[in-house]
Image (cartoon, rainbow, N blue to C red; front, side):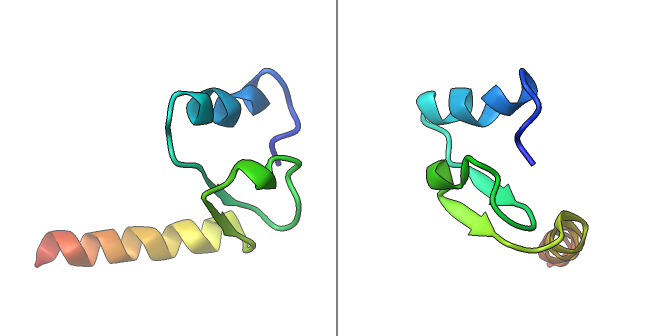
Length: 60
């Protein structure tokens, strides 16, 4: 949810260093405006699908 500090500073530090930011969350995080990609879905569901896709790519 990006509301607990100091951990919530991590995306801001990453952005300042030039990183792309992907936020996966149900609802607003207060940092949605810095996201390059914003996915409004349960993180567990999204990450499961990401891992499945990565596994299929690795097998190819």
